[in-house]
Length: 278
Image (cartoon, rainbow, N blue to C red; front, side):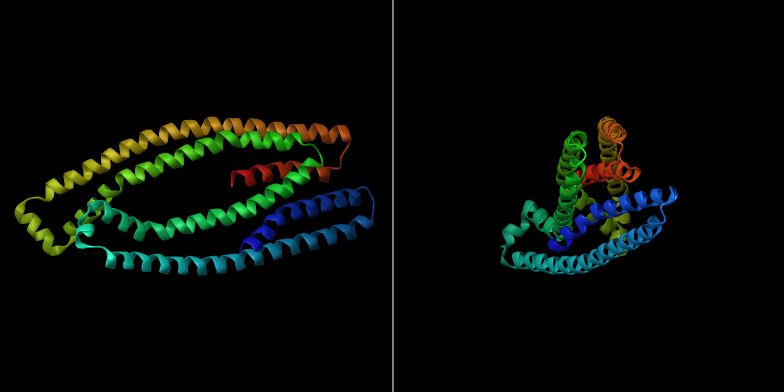
């Protein structure tokens, strides 16, 4: 899978090169060069071929990746069940152990799936990063440096946001589990009758609503704070990204580069920033 992802990572740069040639040939054709028509047709065919190969490889990767995810889910379930069998009754009575077992059962498969997604995406993005950086360096190293700088604030803020949400998830996990059990009890017909007789329904309902309201207020404050941080980082990103594009336009005019080369480098900057972000 990693090898296929590496090949897929090269495809965007190949597409840029083919599209640059197509634009240049199209301009030649408009200027009266009849040979440009044949070159345009060849460029389009090559462009479609690269896209087709990329799509086929992506489907192959997706097939094997889903198979691997299913295997991991089976493997983790077996580990959890085996762990329960080997634990003593006293250990099972410990709420912390119970929370860990529930997290492993409910979250591990999804988290490992996300980790694998991140690893494979990193491989693809890293190859795209190297190939696009090489392409841009042929014009100037300045756009590469500016693009890297532009992603630093967003990266730092994103890491802080992920850490905050992870801590919130850990702190609230037991309460969410408790509320889920309460709701399960209250929606069971036999239990609902007993709760009605004991007149405990309003107490449980108030507890659930109060807990949800507290979580919603905390989430609202956190989202507002993170929205401000992300907006500041976005302004920083746009400033450096468009500075890179303006620099490329100035270099293209100074060196009298073709329209295809100009278009390729401007698109390459966006692709380069996207590969870093991924």
